[in-house]
Length: 306
Image (tube, rainbow, N blue to C red; front, side, top):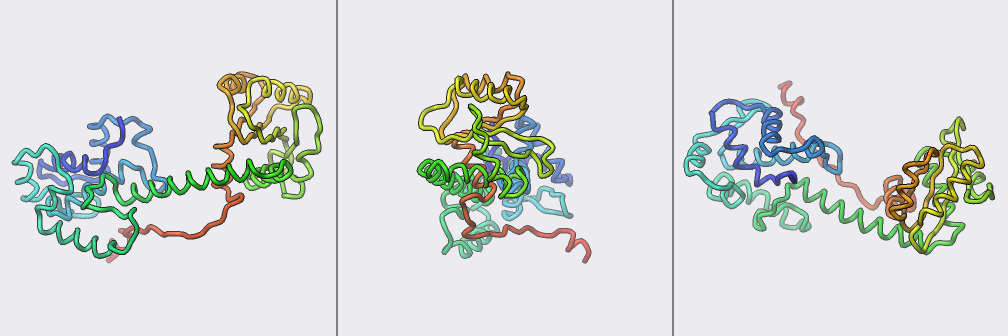
């Protein structure tokens, strides 16, 4: 199943604390993950920042908002317990707890108003209780980041397709060097385009010491790349007694091409236009940084030394 949003988690978190005991947050996360039958992949899925698991983050926000409404309390760092208000709410047997439920509590309204004052001049990606969003602030940032990244990658691919063949070769060299292949830029540049053997556009060192080499096929392609082209490249590798190759194109590969590359003895990596644009964005090839936003959290260790 999909990872539940933070509002869906509010009632389960409150029910978990209904025994009146102190619950360790990390243990609560595990119990709730079991309750929702999350897979290992879903439990380990990270926010785009890589700083925290998505599910942990959403449980954390559910706990935080319940606490702001006075339904939970934190007796000590990393633990939470139910309050009399929380017990009273569970006694009504609510089918769901969400932002609208919490707005019945003055403490939460005060908290919401503080948040509203801070965000009234900010962009739409800021979390809004009025819209009853299912997104945590991190989810909203992640969504905005993914949209910006998708738009950027689309722009990159369009620009690469419009570039000249020689410039495309330069793009490939710059990317491979940024990824740690080929030694320095000058050496890599001499390697690409010098081979001339059928099906091979260039050779580049796998590491800076040149302990192994990678053969390259880099083509701006209009149509889908099929199995015959991969077979041709594989044959060229065999002719050079080569073990590794990278086939880079601005288009895409057929299913048969992918299947063929996966079963032959030579290791051939297929990089289509979509993957190429992602790698270029990730390794800062043809892109520039226009702004940075720091997301900070409380340093609990600092306050523990009080």
